[in-house]
Image 1 (cartoon, one colour):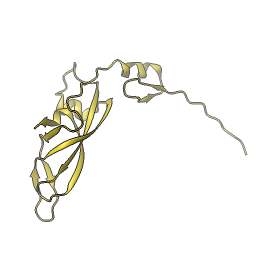
Image 2: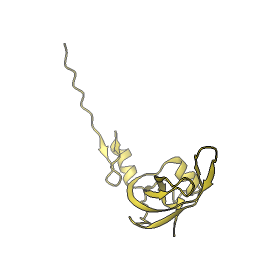
Image 3: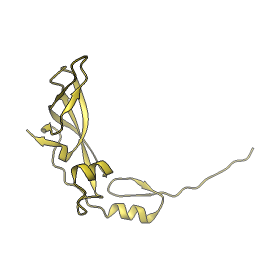
Image 4: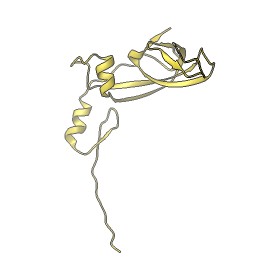
Length: 125
């Protein structure tokens, strides 16, 4: 039997703690803009896009009101967030963003649920 040892170097962004294999990629990530926290834990918020309740035989859209229970991030923004919510504006893309975990009750079926949302997807009540 032979023992194989692999040494692996990783570099971490100080802002989002994402690991990269090169110094250049980590520095590039660190130089990205950082979104401001718009909501705080405990804020009452409302979603903008309707969700679908999968209650048997009565699928319907609804908009909920809920509370922010946790803030995740900052983390690098993904393609959907940049295109859909930021409109692909070059000054705003490729930044670090926060995700908000919202606890709400479905107005259709009454179930308690949680979901993750970005700041532009919510508005304060």
